[in-house]
Structures are given as C-alpha cells and as structure tokens.
Length: 399
Image 1 (cartoon, rainbow, N blue to C red):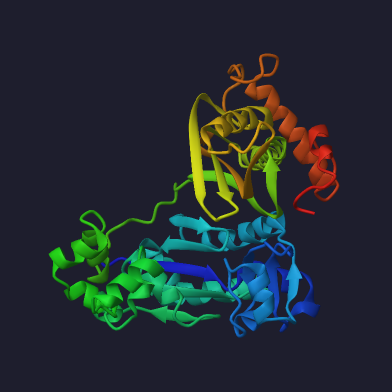
Image 2: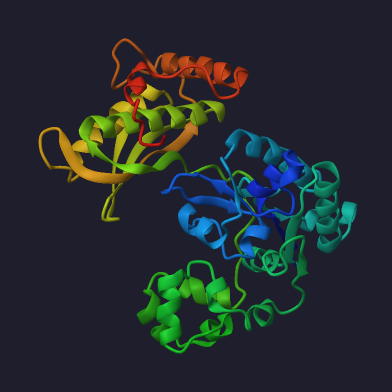
C-alpha cells in the first residue's frame, strides 16, 4: 500500500498571528523581529514580501526595501499557543504527526484513509478547520514521501494545496535545484557553475561527478532524494534537539563583564523554556559572533542534565576562557552576537541530583525556582522577576 504523507506549513505564521490579533495590520506589510538596526526579520507578511523583504534578512535591509512596513516584536508564547491549536487539529486525523517547528509538520495519513478519505481530502479538511477555527491559512503538500510533500507544500503559497501523484521523480525533475534539501546558496552556485540547473539534472548526474561537487557522504543522499527515493518514516516522537537563545546587539559588547551579563540573560531565557517544556540538558554551547562577522562556538558536557539558570550560566561563563577574547584584562575583542544553547535534552532530572556549580542549590531546587519565576512572568505578561546582576545593564546593548 502506497504511503500518503502530508506536509502542512502555516502561511507567514508569526506575521499572520499578529494580523489575527490586530486586524488593523491586515493587508499591510508586517515585519516580525527586532526593531534595532542590527535586528533580524523573524517573519514577513506576504504584503512585505512583495517588496523583497523576507525572513532571516537584516531588519535594516528589510525596512530599506519596505519603508512603510510595520515592525512588531516577536511574541513566542502567543505563537506557541496558536501552534498548539493547529497541532491539535492535525492529531484529529492521525497520531503520526512529526512537528518540525511551530508552524509546520509531517503527517502520515496512510492508515487514516478508511475513516477520512484520501490524503487530498484530509489535507482539504485540515486547511478548512485551521481557517474556520483559528482564522489562519495553511498550505499543504500530499505525496508518497516526506521530501516530495515538503516541496509540494511550498509551490502554491499562500493557501495552496499541491498533490503529487504517480512518478515522484517526474514531479521533481523540472524544479530548480535550489529547492533541494541541503543545497544552500554556495552549493547551488557551485552546481550551476558545473552545468546543473534542476533537480532532474541531479538525479541524472554521474555519481562520481556529484561526489566531487558535494562530497562523498552527502552526494548519494541528495541524488537519492532527487530520484524520489525517500523511505523516511514520519516520527511522532521526534523531540527538540536543543533549546537556545541568542541576540545581535545594537552596540558591540566590548568588556568581559558585558559578555558575562549577556550569558546570564540568555541562560535565564533558556532555563525558562526548558522548565516550560519539562526538559533538561547536559550539553551547554556558547556562540559568539565578532564585529568582523567571524563566528565561533564552544561547548561542554556536564555530568548531569540541568535546567536552571545558575547551572547553565556557570557552564557558559566557564566556556569564555576557550574563546579568543584577548584585548586587555577588562576589554575584549568586540562581539556583536551572543548565544547560549542547551542540548542533549531529556525529561526533567530527578530530585536530589547534585549541582556542579552551586553547592547550596541542586538542579531540582533551581528548577523549582525557575517554575516560580515562570508563573510570575505569566501572571504579569512577561514582566516580574529579573536577576539583580542584570540591573547593571542600564546601558543594556539591546535597548
């Protein structure tokens, strides 16, 4: 029995949620993201995209292209709330739902056809229920495999529905090679310089030639996908690989103390998300981007999973010694972006686990503190408790 896989992708999700909550924004160019000169666009409405603005673009560039855009600060908790409602609709039709992010998921509806009809019918019902119950639009792709379904969902956005029937390779063949997973701008430029233009070209390519261009390990995978060969199952137990927080600052951070305070701020944000999702992790990663745009990361593995600010911050602060920061005793090489990520995620740790960084506080006690902070923030709309050390940042680079 041939599988039927859906890929459902919400249309301009963050921007659409902002329009849903503030109808005055509808039809206007909306940019979700940091409004500072170094901010980055998290989402752009379709009205803004007509001017060339898009997600991941520097906010300054997006505003230059679309000077009449309305810039809205991201509201992660609100997006998570709407996302939960969307995923609840998905699960009415199948338990095999693999979330990729807040706004997209794979669904295996093969075993659901006897109850709800074929994949196309199910996709139409899901789209209609998202529109009717939530007030948003989604695009969907229906195909025998994940790769083709994902590509199909993107072809007729917004509010699109594309069904791949018959020969998957024939469907893929005429599409531009940039639509391939794993083919970024640099790889695409290299492939086009070598005479490749479509996914079909990749499917027909000499395997040795493709390995020379893309590497021995990656080329066979790409060519298999280009030929429509994708047996990957929809994994409903797929969990988050990591949880992180990062920020690009209006002014470069130029002191070690400034870096430490940035790490403390991010550690607190990560801890709140870990507690909210009932997770902990034993890998802490720090990312720094210098003023010259050089990017460096360092990581450490802890003896036990943690989910509290102090443990995450302690590990992150210790990692600073492994970066090239030297300028003077107090000053450091200018840094424009700071990030903290926790990986190696598991369910929250058991009580009684000892903390590596705070003898008087176990991770369990730290987690309970984070729960209290989270409840206060929820009650006061995100305001409430902050670390006293962060009050030093009267000149907070973010402000």
